Length: 442
Image (cartoon, rainbow, N blue to C red; front, side):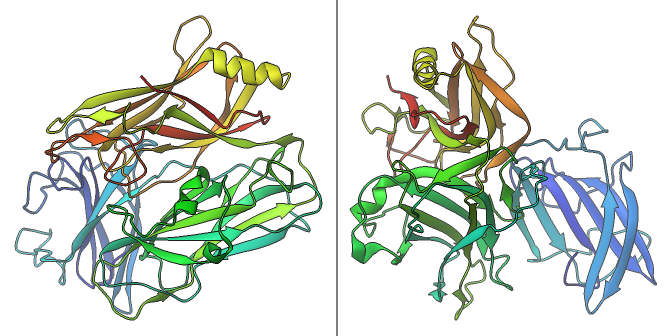
C-alpha cells in the first residue's frame, strides 16, 4: 500500500537497485484493481514479464491511500525474471506515482520521481513456536525514555539496564519489541546484549547516542556487553521460546545487566522526534523443562588475527567451533547432544555472505545451520528454526564470512567498531552447558 491514488510498486532486488529485480506494480482505476508482474532492466520503468506469475486478491483506494493485495509462489517461476524467496535477507525496493496510467498499462511517462526507496527484510522467520498459554508471567520493559532523535539519516543509541533482582530462579520465555506508535519506520532494529563485567552505577540507564564508525563516547564498561540475547528487526514479531525451554534468570551465573542497542532511521531528517521504544521481556517462576543458552561461535574478535585486505570483492575468513571443545562441554554436562532453536549471524559493514556450517563426527557435512547470501549489517534478527537442529558430541561447526572490501583503501582488522570486522554467529540452544564462546583464531 502507498500514500497515493496513483500506481504503487514493490520488488525483490539482489542489491537494492532496479537492475535484476523482480517487481510488481498495481493500481486502482474506477474501482477496479490491477496488478502486473515485471522485471527491472535499469533505471527505467520495468517492462512486463512474459509470464504473469502473480494473482490479484483485492484492491481499493481510501483517504488518499492505494491498497493492492496479491500473492505469488515463493519459488521463482520464470527464469531470469522471477526471484526465489528464501530465508536470506532480501532487499525490498518500492516506488509510487501520483497518477493512474493514462492507458491500459503503466508506462515510462508515469515516473516515480523521488517517491522510491529500499528496505531489507527477512520473509521466512517463524518467530517462535510456543503454543503454551503464558499465565502469571512477569514483564520487564527496557525503553528509551524521551530519547530525542537527531537530524541524522541513521544512528544508534545504547542504554544499559539493570535486570530485576530475583531471590530464586526464573525463566525468560518471550521478547517483544515495543515500538512507539508512529515511529514504525524510524526504529530499524533492536539488539539486547548480556553484560559480563561490572557496570559503573552512573552508567546504568544512561542513554548514549553512538557513532559506531568512531565510538569514542562509548564507556569502557559497555564493551563487556557483547553476548547477544535477542535481536529484533523491522517487520519482525515477538520472539517466543518453545514450551520446554527458558533462558535462566536469577542464578549465580545469570547476567545482572543488559545493553539495549537501537538502530534508528530518520531519512527525511525530521526535527523534534522523541522516542520511547524498546523491548519487553517476559519471565516466570514456572520453570520449563530445559535451560536454554546463547553461544557465540566463529572467529575470535582480534585486530592481530583477523585482517582483511583492501580493494577485494570477495575475501573469505573462517572460525571454528571444534569437535573437541563441543565434546568437552557436553561431557562436563553429561550430555550427548545439544539442540539448536535459532540463531543470528553477525559481521560488520564488509560482510556480504555469512553461513554456519555443520560438520558431523564422521567428517561429512550436513545442511547449513544458518545461511544468508544477502547479509545486511543494518538488518539483524534472531532467526527461529521451524525444526530443532541437533549437534552431537563429536560434531563441529564452522563460521564462514565472505567480505567485500572494494571501497576500502586500507587493511581492515577485527574489532568492535563498525569499521572493524567480526565473523560470528549467536546460537540459541538447549540444554545449557558452561560453554559461552566456541571460537578459534589463526
